[in-house]
Length: 330
Ligand code: CP
Image (cartoon, rainbow, N blue to C red; front, side, top):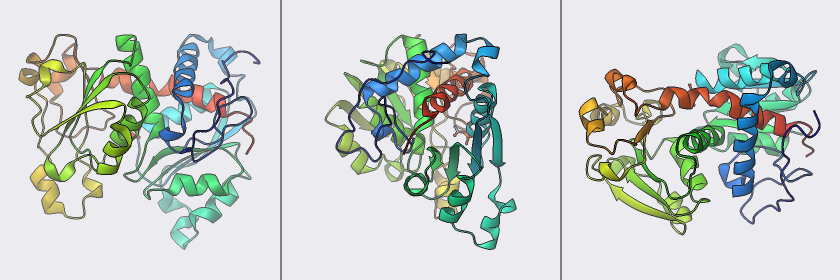
């Protein structure tokens, strides 16, 4: 399989990088999207496009005899199933759990000890955890590559890569896009990672639409404002004619300390066919899913609805990532 996928050029880690690149320039862990250079993001997108064209039998050789561990300490449908599908498509065997309640975590085993065990069984470890920073901690401990499949309200870097892949496929570019991030920008980890990623592209405008209490964390705005044009508003309609992408997010019930507050905000933005009719004809709606009430089912039939094909793009993007982590030396 040598030469099948493009390798990164000698990308030196940036000052803010949390983990270092393996030989050839790619990362040894996927913890934070901030660790990616623009070049590395583009490489993942190019390799994902190649994965879509690769015959099944050739693809199945890439991780033959490898084992991928899939450790989900928090619920998931798309991320877990698309990672496991990707690993199996590449010929790997998959071990792991979808419910930490059936593991020795229940008996009090720490995350550190769990990782020290699993690194003996698997070549790559994909992990979702409810604690912010859990993936970083696991990466510090593990001699195997750790892939962050979401850590609390912090980051979801592989979701961001599939989001960017979807935008690139749809618009042919990411530079100069006008992207609205709407909903729960405080607790939504997908929009946190997406802000950092978009700041690596040129002339991107980001409209941050949220209620006051669910605004994008100020430190993320401070860290990205040098390269993004940022517009903050509570109104979804005000700038709708300007959006190329309306990226809706779920109000993250599970992260609210106060359920009454959640009840007050849960239906704050609802995308209806009438609202979509006010947008430019080329506007596309994205959503990391799952949705609850924020997009009416009638919108699914409209040409603007991109969210199900966005989710489908998770497989080639995760195939690319797993293949690029093959043989990572820490
Ligand atoms: N987008 C996403 O992370 O979905 P799941 O929670 O179903 O994995």
